[in-house]
Image (cartoon, rainbow over all chains, first blue to last red; front, side):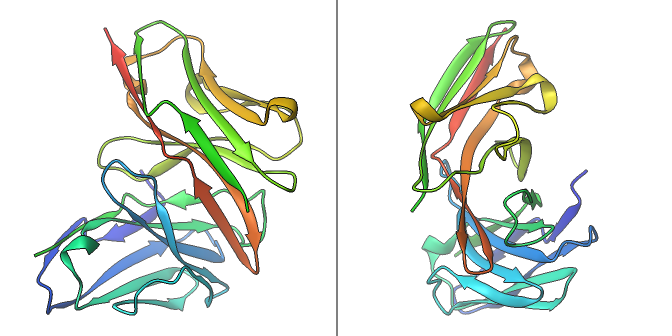
Length: 115
Length: 115
């Protein structure tokens, strides 16, 4: 069982919809991440939160809006997405964001389809 | 900038045979290297990590990797493949960036295990 929980597992949305992806961890980790993974490709970093503050935004389009309400929760708000945004969205956490000895723990992802 | 290159997008091995997955890194500073495994429809799971304590690193599920600075390599091996080893394997390197623990992945190697 993964210690990082993502909901929903699957999401289908139209280009005019607004939806949110949710991620939760109870390991006391202070860094949380969103990655996007296209089929047969490695994960690509989107955002990093460190101590509930956004520390890295990898030039992600504004139709993706992250939110970290507290140290255990991470949301990704979606609005006006394009079909090419269809992918597996992975959430991860680590004990701290600047520590090299702090591996990432991944959730099982949300498979998003934009129609 | 730091990067990793995985040689071979697909590897096919017979059950009981040696598994060898190749990873070469590029880094201007001492790297911190990781191997992750991804089973179908799941997130990524840490197999092992190199953080300069020892050049031969043992991980879970019988995998190990050796850091060779002279060859800039961090190849992953397992003496005897099992059917359950069929998965996608990613080599990754960290790069310090502000407060973020940015994990950069290689392209991945898909392992097929033949009975």
